Length: 381
Ligand code: SF4
Image 1 (cartoon, rainbow, N blue to C red):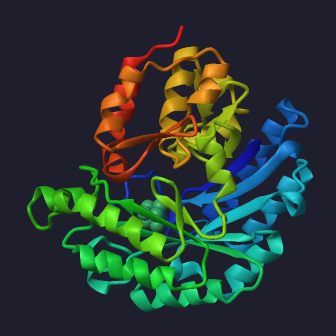
Image 2 (cartoon, helix red, strand yellow; image 1 turned 30 degrees about the vertical axis):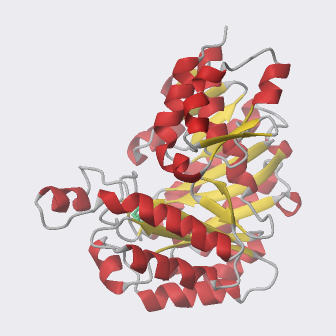
């Protein structure tokens, strides 16, 4: 399956914990220029790979803050996709990320008119002191209003994103946020533990001792969060992703299943015809790359070796609840020795059921160690 990802690198303000390459901007000239460049990038790809975009099944607009794009730019992006062969109305899923402060009647209705059917809202917390501490721009009220607006729209799917293990956050506070979110009529929730990057504002504040994160609470928050969502009818299908009624993210699942995808926009990653590649991440360099005709030499490009493919396959399977399909591997002539995983099965961190090896219980907290063990224990020919 092929997915299309469009990266919108702008945010109104950079959050204190954000380690992505985003640009704080509201400049209409910059949005216009970005859209021109994006269209050129899509056109370049469509010309070099005739018929490829026609086969896409999902579209995802992520960022940054896609909901910050002015309406005329958004319309132009969708019109261009159609021009390059993407029948948006027939895609299995069209997702767009929204931040609460730019989620309103007009941005939502325009996105719907363009063909967006799945809205992903970055809420992070329902507590004002925490939003302030991590430098989010929106207030609790604005977050709730955006969520109410999305949940009141008929015929769309909504995802709510939360974060945990934030500075000064107690388990009960996170669980309270999660419960509040799960009580809305939405079918998808994601929650992510904070990763503190040293170069961010939050990283500096933590280094200066102004704020702290209690790493010991991580496991409790994660496991209790999973339990709470399960009680509310959500199934975990990936380490940080939960859905009701089987409404998983088709686009994201394709990444974890090692399906193909094409990314457009600064630094957007692609996996296509056995290669992983991305254009420059820094906006001025990306602009130069596009204006120079998108030379292959400007791409960061990896041709995957069988070893790379094996490593990816194990990592990406194990982060999903369905786990690693040992039967399928066996059919391909790969027999994973029991010694690679036996101790983790014995101590209840892995389960081997119906020919699949999957994380269970506290195993989810030890995913990195367990997967590394499995990989170290076996190297296919
Ligand atoms: S909204 Fe997201 S991408 Fe933008 S600055 Fe905040 S964390 Fe980074």
